Image 1 (cartoon, rainbow, N blue to C red):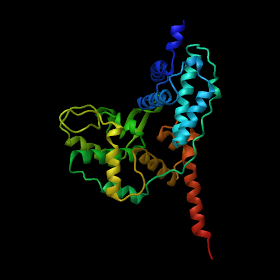
Image 2 (cartoon, helix red, strand yellow):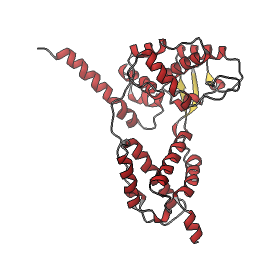
Image 3 (cartoon, rainbow, N blue to C red):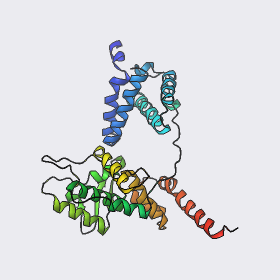
Image 4 (cartoon, helix red, strand yellow):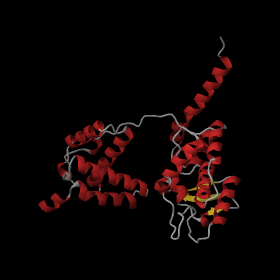
Amino acid sequence: METQTQMRTIQNMSEEYLMWLQVEKRFAQSSIVSYRSRLKCFVRDVGDIVIEELTMEHIFRLKQILHQRDNSEVFIGVALACIKGLLNYCKTQLSIPLRINPSDITIPKRPRREVVFLTSEEIQRFRDSIDIKPIYGLRFRTLVEVLLASGMRISEALSLNRNSIDFTRREARVIGKGNKERVVFFNEEAISWIRQYLDRRTDKHEALFITTGEDPRRLRNQDLTRYFKRQRLIAGINKKVTPHLLRHCFASHLVFNACPFSEIKTLMGHERLDTTIRYYVGLTDKEKAKQAYEKYLRY
């Protein structure tokens, strides 16, 4: 029994917990990678504590270290959510007696930040700056058009296969957040770019977006960082352009065009309407305030 207890350390329990998250809770692979990294950081910074011996003192120690490193509230929140989730798993699924109540671990609220998006002029400038002569340039332009037209998360876009797109109906089924299937839509322009890109390809790979070279594989999110950074500089855009920013562009421009929030919720794949409103209602308030300013301010 003593040997079993000694083995139940954070490090030894982490992979079992992560597997449970992936299989039972249907966490995305990117979330699993993030959680694994945070749990390793806990072991490195606080120690490989036996689960039954973990106390609030260890949690306070983690918070102190993360604050001293000037980590963001979001980073700290994820780190605390990881250890809290692991403890909840040990308590509820394995009935391990704990010295700490997982519910006592408080996670800082994420500060509400203003939604950053590109204006219509910036979007066009970014598009036009992409050189589509090389195949990787055409691939990048196609990806940008797909994200702008559909509002997909980058993981959803990169999971697309050739045969998952209905070119006639201009739609596709994707597996979104929480492993939930949803339908996304494309405009004619995005479909046209997809056709151009596929016409240039000579491979038989099933994935819509693949790497170049003799042995192509499905494109990954980390493959794209340098493309977005480089293109932003070429286009002369000061904002940090990322795949997620293009998702914000999709939603923001729907808001400006008076699309109902209930429809934006569906198009974005949000589970709750208040998530959509929390992110984007401020845009309408700001736009109305600006219109009032221009109409009524007189000296």
